[in-house]
Each structure stands twice: as C-alpha cells, then as structure tokens.
Image (cartoon, rainbow, N blue to C red; front, side):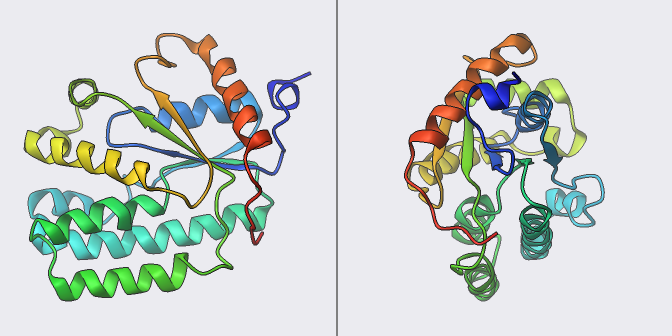
Length: 224
C-alpha cells in the first residue's frame, strides 16, 4: 500500500503550498508529489518577463508583475482541475492579492488606481463561486531569522540585492494573511520541525497530517 492509500488521500486532490520566500515551497512540492505520485505545478520564475525589472524598481513594475502572476496562476488553476486533479502546487493564487498587491499599495509602490484595477480583476476571476479552490493549503512558517538564512543560502542575485526590511515586512504580512485565510482547509507546518532536505523520512508524517485534515475537515463546494 502506498502512502496516499495508507492515509486516505484522494487521487484527484489538489494541494497548494504557501509561504514567504525561502521557506522551502519547491522542496515540499517535489517531496509530496513523489510520495503521493501526484503531478507538480510550479511558479514560472525563470520565464517571468517582469521579475528582474520589478526587483530593480518596485513602483514602476509592481502592477505589471501582479497582473502577470494573476493571469498565469488563473490559467494554471483551471488546468489542474480540468486535468482531473492529482497535483501539488507551488504557491497559491490567493497570496498575490492578500499579500503582495496589498503591500505595494500600502507602501506606496502601487498607485490607488492600479490597486483598485487589480483587486477588481482578481475578485471577478478568482472569487467567483465557479472558480475551483484547492482541497488543502499547506502553510510553511518559520521565524524571520530562519527565512533570511534560507534566502542567503540559495543565493539568488535579485533576492540578495533586496533590502532586509522588505523580507521582514513580507514575513509579517504572510502571518497576518494566513491567520485570516478561509478559502479552503489549512495545514500549518514549521520549517524547523519538518526539514525535508535534512530528513527526507519526515515526508510520511506530513502526509499523515494531510490525510487527517482532509478526512476530518468540512466539505467545501468545488467546481471541477
């Protein structure tokens, strides 16, 4: 019996991994997909035409970046459900409006007009009762020091050049966001307690927790 069957996880489930930069979303996505025999859905960082420009000038490119992410994530969300599920997704569509766009508007790096345009579009596309929600959102959380250390370890140039205050602000906003998130069931995991790079065997304990949440949470109406 494989782990998916052992812990009663449906083969058409869609599980989304969320958390701030550096918490290990990609590692978790790959590990769970391999263990459950699910497909993966990754954020397209390398082909993003705005990301490098955004890190150089937040005010100039924040709106463009958010619109790009919204379009890409919307298409990917539909694709996963039209395919029939069975996916682990790296980053959710909900983080864009609840964290990033809101942060740039409040800090003055996105204009009020751009923010209203973005949120109106997001609500029309994503908040519709016909838009499919994930079966579970796994939130990876860590202390600010843990997050900064991981960002330094992976060494992406555009992230190394970003002011430390930006990561501190984002970490705080993520915590506020997840405390009020209710679009689907949530499983919170500490990155210090479940480090799949240092201990690959901990994946079974994570899958056990996933099964418990999915099998005991209330049913959400979905459009597949």
